[in-house]
Image 1: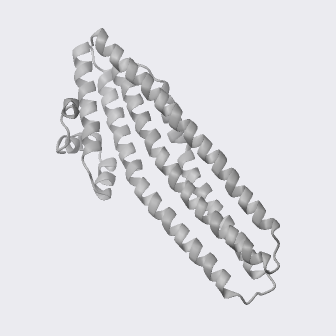
Image 2: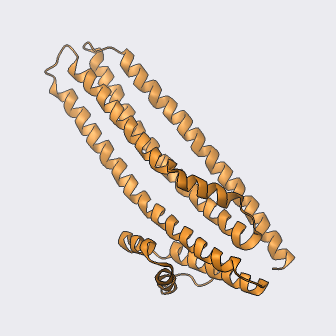
Image 3: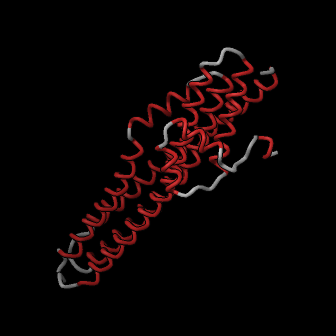
Length: 253
């Protein structure tokens, strides 16, 4: 690799790290302020009391809170997608171009911690907690025969849960794509580490980049993505080579 190429990749790496930090800060602020607003609304709803007409107002606050939980969940997933894209590019540059390992180690440790799954459970827990509080508000009011409040709560919960499931399912495409890209990096990294000369290293690095662009530019169905993630290394690489994706990075210029 020439010095100019190294400098270009190093500048790109710095830009990627800045982008990762930016999206990471955005996610932290989104969760911090979002959860603060949600817990404040839930607390305010609990202090409104269970007597009519304040119970009706309380149910309204709970429904608004449930709506905000779903919106916050969607925004969280959106920024996670942007963050993950930046992290993958940073990992690639560190492994195949600059021979560093900071982002790679951080992302591997985070992936094995299971925190991503815990986040989905946290949002679902907030939604269920808001629903339970709303049930108490609707059933313990003076007018316990008011079915309309209960109906609104059940409809809100159903729509909220459906929206979160749809968001989660769409996010699984990103998650599976991420697993496939990680698999490409792991396989090519082993080949890269076994190289004995710079020419072979450049060839493996270019092949890894080509494989990743093929995955990113070819719209594959969920089943095929899942099938790819379960293949052994030999079958996996053969299937990647058969994709009609982008052959080289120069196609984007």
